[in-house]
Image (tube, rainbow, N blue to C red):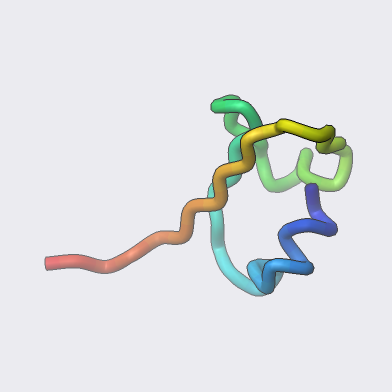
Length: 49
């Protein structure tokens, strides 16, 4: 998962991640393997008002 995050350009940002609707902690991303048909969510914080 960590490689995908880097390839998508999110490596320098604060993000939240999930695979198949299960939260993945930042320290676990390097150990999280992805397989075909996994659903990956990457969420970035936004300010609003």
